[in-house]
Amino acid sequence: MAHLMAAGSEPPSLGATTASVPRRRRIPRPNGWQILGIVLMLVSWELYAWHVHDQNPRRGDTMFPRFEFIATKSYPEFATFYGIEKGMLGRRSNYRQATVVLVKNSFVTAKRVLIGAGLGIGLGVAIGLMVGWSRRAREIVLPPILLLRTIPILALIPLFMFWFGAREIGILIYITFAVFAMMIINTLEAIRNVSPLYQDYARCMGASRFQVYRTVVTPAIVPALAGGIRVILGISWAIALAGELLSTDRGLGWLMILSERQLKTGSMAVVVALFVLFSLIVNAVFVRVSTYLSRWQPRADLT
Amino acid sequence: MAQDTSSSRSGTAAVKIELADVRKTFTTEGHGTLDVLKGVTAEILDKEFVALIGPSGCGKSTLLNIVAGLLAPTSGRVLLDGQEVRGPGAERGMVFQQDAILMWRKVLGNVEYGLELRGVPKEERRRIAMEYIRLVGLEQFRDFFPKELSGGMRKRCQIAAVFANNPEVLLMDEPFGSLDYPTKVTLQEEVLKIWAREQKTTLFVTHDVEEALFLADRVFVVQQGRIATIVPVPFARPRQAGIRALPEFRDLLVELWAYLSERA
Image (cartoon, rainbow over the protein chains, first blue to last red):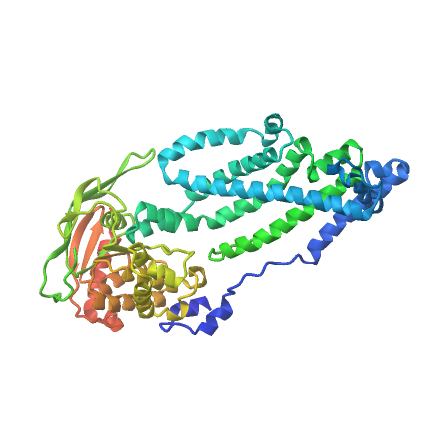
């Protein structure tokens, strides 16, 4: 089709082309085999949990909880933390209070992730663009950033605890910093990968250095940035969790550490499931956004 | 700077581009230096269509890049209307061999690009862009992204974008090298059509002798970094596709092939 279109001296009809070129990319849904993979994983968990339970009926669910135990025992036990911010405790086991506790703490963590990642991404892209603009700025700014990046982000948690304690600003700065460090590298790498052909072309069209930057470099890096942001958003949940594990008194990570201290494996599984759920939601939303932003790019398959 | 477009071609013999002993030496890693251009001196007249042909590696693309201002000559000078070329500029439009097209802009946005850079008001630049989009037959595709076009259509879009920017000099670097034969022939005719209308001084690099003879007023044969010979093309304009079958055309073709095949 494309060949015939190119060869004919007459431009082909609009209808013929729209039929051969899918203009809107559908986000693929998981097929049966992919779902089967997930089901197999869950079934394996359950089978092993039953095995552990048979070996040790009294303690089995503490070590490796069955789904039934998670749903009927672990989940409602989050009610214990109901009203803890007012210095009270909730019931030992109650679905409604447990749900309130989980939703409230989910919101706390989601807010931290979105604010921290949003600021980190915004700063990373903005400073990356500014630094990428000038060779001198790059020479000054890049080495310290590369150095900072080699510090394992988890190793900074004690330092942040020392500086900020359990204050909200501490964990926000922590997430922002971690995301920023990843994002600026991502941005500079994307800038470096812009084809020199685009820049030569723009200069021949009369673009000034600044115009090349504004009309070529900035739009050209969008798909690369979108790819980076997608990965970083995923990691930022883990960073938030790590920060909350050690230095806050609210949020999913905090529920996680309390569960761990009380040897409640099932409760930990509930928190993990929530993290998985939120990561998937954020990813699904972002894939839509980035598919739209990268729609001009050949082979922009984001799944 | 402004070019007098009303004067007829035959009447003007003004030199548009002057190449004065242009040399270019590349320093390669581990293989010493490479003299790609060994002193090119030539004059290209105003509104003249000159084709540069030569075997690959002869330096013809390097020469074009130097005229475009994308490369600086090691020594020698390129003069445009008597002014030395220092860097690229909108008065020298370049059609690249590759898909030099902004992939994130639709056809219309691409053709408007140069005008946008110059701050031409929106309605004005839309009007001009649409004129050239129509000229290359892409009006139905103005809202398509380049990836949705065929290779030939992308090339048309590039040509429209460069012409819409109204350069004084047109530089074309094997623009149709990657296209299939029918598309290539069609585009050659379209370029001649637009060229006849706009009368721009054109430097056209190609390794396709037939293409050079069909398009150009003069053919510069580049060999080993020098202009080996200059062949005037006698055919009257407007040229029809059929001139390729003329015996004179075939004779010139054979003569030029001889230059391309001998490599020492």
